[in-house]
Length: 104
Image (cartoon, rainbow, N blue to C red; front, side, top):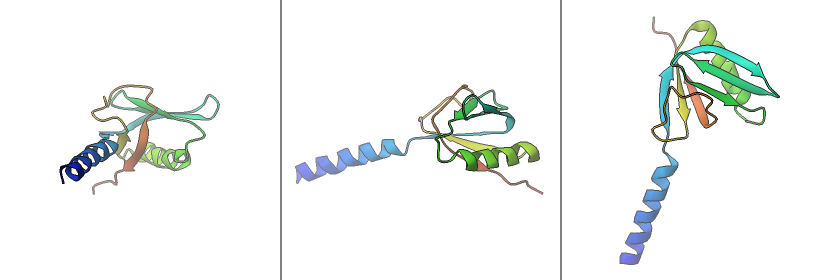
């Protein structure tokens, strides 16, 4: 019985780390495209992240980013790292973004 309890606790600890992430709420300052297919997002909190052309989410996140930039809407940027510094630059551990709608 203790063996199964140990296995269960170990799996719970391992799986909780796989959900670790950091959400950063900000707006987009500017977007750069170039450097062999990379897209760079520069954020108003002084942070930035990049996406390579091989990233399957690049086009979707670029479309959402351009919408956020032109409308001034906020985004939530989710990084893989737990407790990541939202103001650090040159990040490449992007998990995804949320686009906020405007409050009327």
